[in-house]
Length: 322
Image (cartoon, rainbow, N blue to C red; front, side):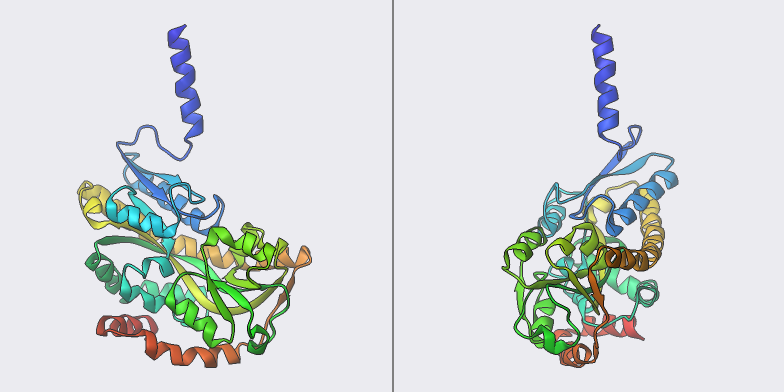
């Protein structure tokens, strides 16, 4: 009877933990704040699968979605403290800890995700890794979090329509300054608070990607989506460098290879998801408009000089844009 009960418990655990290879010798615990089927989560799941494949199941990644083990700032701090093995966070959050990466958050830096991919796979990749290592991180991969647009309660057709609107932004200086330059009243707040803030009128709108707008059902409380495309946001996968260095050498190699390959796959996946998602929103009766972005672009230009503060940021900017 005891053996039967023990077998039953083991079976239940196996069902309850589907993301963990039970035979793996090395289990890397990774956290992110997105929903399970988000574009970011799809990339992390691909990373896990590739790592298992490349190590013959010796190593795997146990994934904790939906902020289960912390919000983005807490995840990065957990990596620093060693309480979190791996974090998938927006570049905007990571750049508060790795200053050079702020360059990637400049408005209208890349026109589309393929352009972003070319830049991330070029000379800038090594510079980004060096910057991450200089702050104690190992950069495993750079994913796309989609191109950021505007969700509001009215159509935004020109920059003038944004005047004095309270717009939620990430808690990142570049984002705040950008929306101040656009004439809005930028209101930084945690992502987890956004739905309620839109619902209650604490904010009039927010910037965000199509995938998040749909997955988080923000259209229920902000049913106008304006395709401004102000930011091509990246999502970074990081570990503490010393924890990465403690892995067996073959696992380190496999993890970095899997990071590169999963990033290439994920960014293309995001491209393929965009048009069907926009059509899905239109079918739900959401107002999807393509505004005149000339005013936004003109207002963004003065921000560039103000946020490139160091020689290393300038070098990375040139590597990304040349």
